[in-house]
Length: 372
Image: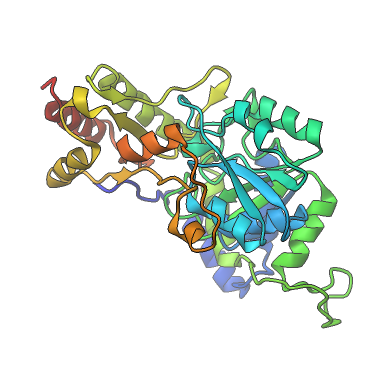
């Protein structure tokens, strides 16, 4: 069983065929604008802008927010490397904050002490689909005049106090990679209520063609080709029509995992916080080796022998080789992130995963521990 497989059971094929027959296969087709508008509305936003990936949506968001060389961006130490790369692409310095023990998200209590006169943006990530503590993050940002860019790549449809993830900061960024709740194969989108930020992102996305004179061929800034195709948007529109159903299926899978694994000695299951509705991008657990009876790596190897795929969690960002090579590595300890990297893994979480498959996985995990 792979950790994730896409589910394409709606109108995706129908819409792709329409796009092919209409001849619009590049970035100017009707499906692109419809997908942007409908996904933005789903997130409670005025504007949506498709991009080539979640990574490029973050890059564009930071460019639109004015991040450049000499600025600092605050981000969680525990995140996908795309969050870090977007900061580096802008020439800015990443400033890391350890994560909360329960949510694995940016710890608001540690943000303020990391703010300097060079700080430009706070970049929380909703890790594994669980919302970050946005009230505190937004309050700190407002006090210091900082923008908030949400990395919601893993959090399609997740709710924080009734608001969609990606719908609370100045800009929200999403990925539509094949392992996400909804997919276009590759691709991403940023959403915002701010027309000026939207226009800046559009400008950079399309090689910095002048928005008011696109055929002038005068380029005043360094631009990028981060455009999204009409074929991808056709798939995305079909996926979006099923997003709430898919979200319910993922949450049902997570509930089955929780019920079966919460009492296994040495296994810690994810904790959904009050006021939050997780999207459960992946179902992730941590292992206490002394209690469980084996290390995370040994468990993963044993599961593989039984036909069950799994993945270790993200390595800490502060010590990534890419930062060491640039003199940007942070020698300070980040204990929660480091512990997650050593003891955490995620299990198969495909939207289409059946109840009997979850039961088999849980039976195998339980049988391998000391409690067998």
